Image 1: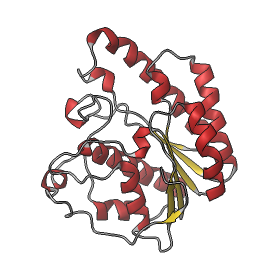
Image 2: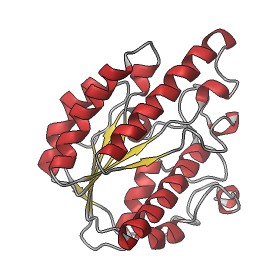
Image 3: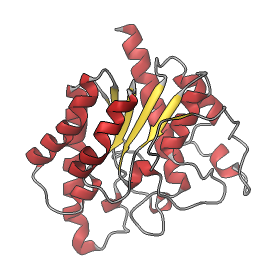
Image 4: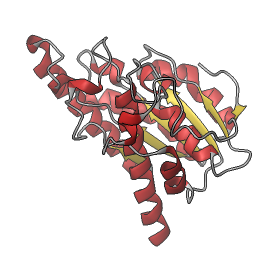
Length: 246
C-alpha cells in the first residue's frame, strides 16, 4: 500500500521494456500500447488520481512471458502521467479487504489527497460468500458518495467472470457466478447513478478465459491486467468524448 501521495515518475516508454520482451502483448488484439493509451486519455482533465480497493487494485498478479508485469492501476497512472507534468497519484489499495474495511482504512486518506479521479475495485471479497445486495450497495455508497461529493470522478472496475472460467469447482461455480453477477450489477448501477464511470470487465470477451488468471485461480496474470487496462482506457476515452459532446 502507498500510504502517502507521490508524484508520478517521469513517463517511460513501457511498450518495449521488460526482460522477457512484450511481443505477445504487442500483438494481442485485446491490449493497447502505452503510447496509444496515453493519447487516448490525454483529453481527461485529471491531474490527481487515487486508487482504492483490495488486491485487484493493489496489483496482485502472476507474471506471464510476453506481457509487461504492470498492474492495470499502474498502467493507468503511467498513461495519465505521460501527458501531464506534475501529475500525482496514490494507491491505497490493500489485499483481502471487504467494502466496509476499504472505507474504514482508505476513505479518509483518499479525501486528504484531494483527487480529481478515483479508481476503485471493491466487493470481491464480500461476494466470495453470501451477501445482501441492498446492504452491499449501502456500503459501497458510504465509500463512493463522499468521494463524489468532494468533486472527484469515481471510476469503478468490474471483475472478470472467474466463476465461469472452469477454474472454480463445479459445486461452487453456479452460486459464485450469481453473486458476482449481482456485485457487478449493483456496482454499475450505483456508479452511474453518481455520475461516475463503470468499466464492464465482468462481461469482457476474455472474462471467462482461464488464460488470463494467476495460478491462485483468483487474481489475474499479467495478460489479465493488460486486458483490463485496455478496457479501462477504451471506456474512459468513450466517456470523455461523450462528455465533451454533451
